[in-house]
Length: 293
Image (cartoon, rainbow, N blue to C red; front, side, top):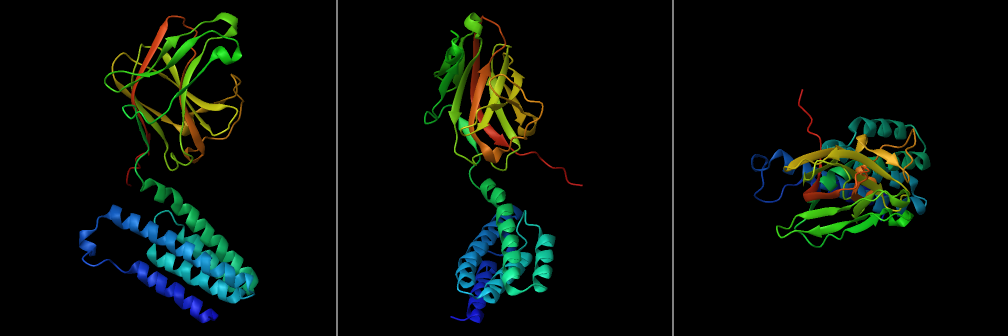
């Protein structure tokens, strides 16, 4: 199959992507459905183009590879998927037009990679919303107390009859201790695209801490909140969380991204030795609402 045939394959793929299913017209689709469909089409087109272009380039047909990538980028311009920088695509196309085939193929490939990555968070947001519902017993919580450093504080996780989670125990300051925490592992990228998490909680008026960290991280990003004795919803933005490494807080640290989080947890370390109690109904991701101009 020659280079011209490969280009036709991509053109046909783009045409199929633009085609509407039978019985589905513009008047029957909402804006959200259109955006979701465009995102999925864009990702399929890019994957198809790279799958066609790589063997062509490796076979010495750099011009054919560049043609495949160019047609695909033009298709993305017409499709206009959410999150894709169309001006960046246009710049890549103009630059590639002045380059030799071997170089232009890479210029266009970088543009395809960037387009694919920019649609990733949009595609993830089309999936079911991230939510830890404490009535769901499939979520496993484990305890990390000051016992790991010689302390004798008590604390752990349980569920009440209503299916709400309960973090409870009692701190002790003996042996330089004084903290208790519960934690759970979440799948990587579960919180990609979210600006933070919100929790419906009720407590005892004490100060608690939300923990979040990438899988395998030595430290955790933390944000404090006070748990009132009535049910309330607490919101914590990832960009407001601060890094703590075994109690040491560095003066500078990277902003936490939801994409990187593999662990969530709750901590109490307020140096009070009376029993503590925090009830949690659910924890879920949230996205900031942007006001229209």
